[in-house]
Amino acid sequence: MVATAASSTSLGRNFFPHSRLATPRELDDWQPLKQRWRLRSRQAVRFILLGQVTLSVLLVSFVLPRVLPTGSDVRSRQVELGRAPRLVPGSYTGPFVGAARLDQSDSGLLVDTSDRAAVVDFYNRRFVPTLATSPGWTGSVDGCNPGATSAEYESATITMVNFYRAMAGLPANVQLLSNISEKDQRVALMILANSAMSHRPPASWTCATPEGLEAAAHSLQAHSTAYRAGVPASGHGPQAIVEYLYDDGDNNTAVDHRRWVLYPPTTIMGTGSGLVSGRGTQDGSNALWVTANYGGERPAGPDFVAWPAAGFMPYPILSVPTASWVAPQALRWSLARPETDFSNAVVHMTEQGRPVPLRIVYRNAPDDRMSADPAIVWQPEPSPDFGPGMADRTFEVTVTGALVGRAPHTYQYRVTVIDPASVSP
Image 1 (cartoon, rainbow, N blue to C red):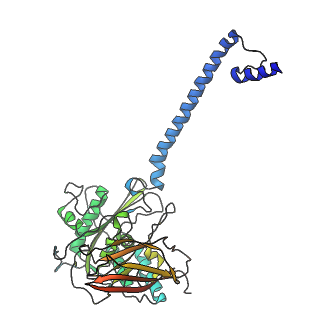
Image 2 (spheres, rainbow, N blue to C red; image 1 turned 135 degrees about the horizontal axis):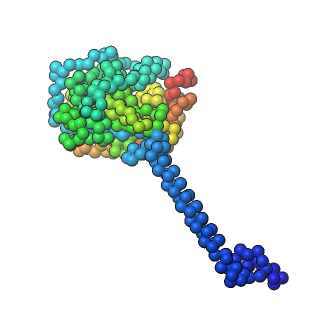
Image 3 (cartoon, helix red, strand yellow; image 1 turned 135 degrees about the vertical axis):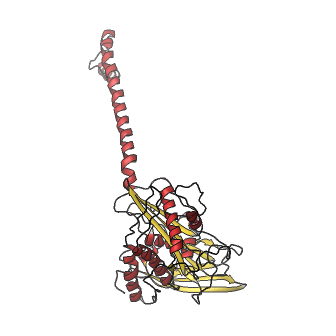
């Protein structure tokens, strides 16, 4: 029994299949073999580490740029919105009198949002084909050529603006002005050339011009990058308008982009877009001049502007295309009204009589001079799940405690989110 125990111990320590301990000579003969094993082991470890490093380099250099966003663009989507411009009424008078208007196919869009069939028809005739319009951009970052997009694309961009205004119950007869659109085209170029957005860009920016610097101060701005095939850049033209209405991002809790597009006095705008491709990516940009009518004459109605608005709302107009590898961000709801103090307002939402939990993410203060009309913004938690095949979902919204002067006001409306591809229940 003792010999057996010694055999087990020597095997574990010296790797000799004998019942006795190794002699000094045998140990000497064994040392070169041990050294060769150690050398081969170190070489194997180096080979594995080198392979891991090589694989990592290939992954970062060639694979990830095609499937994932990088840098500051690691978000739920591949688009960024610059901060919306802020002005004081009367602080700016633009060269708009006598400016040449671009030819528009729509003198004004109208839709009865209380009629589900009318809303679905309006969505299919205006929203869907407008998104499919090709930009036809003739410019180039090389040589700082702002170029131009096709007339059809410019028309599609402003049609999308008017589509959303009609869905919000606003006058939907906004037209483009050629002189400010030419300046916005330079902003779109600057965004692409510098991969950045600013309302006060320095003159040292690549492709910066006096016209572009002027327009940047008065325009909404969007920039997007698509990193893989089948996911087009969305921050240009009509798609940029969808982005402005969705208005996500940590720096956009006040939904200023949305409020500018839905600013009631607006009748004229300018726009410019660009789109470039290279090395498996696609970059898009847009500038939308929105301050031309700031502080101007207001239409007779509506009394307030809510988004989502009262009536039937197709879910695609409340969202943005999202790649399969990311999750959509929650939709922010908003209500804006001129000369209104929402600092102590309260929002209640219900669905089929059940309260909808929500969180207020922004409200104006009495001395807050914002870019457009004062507003209150909230976010249901968790955000309702809207998508293909969904049944109609109706929400009752009540905003209380808003002050107009010193008088409290209450606003109530009903929103029904629908799948436009589904038959009415």
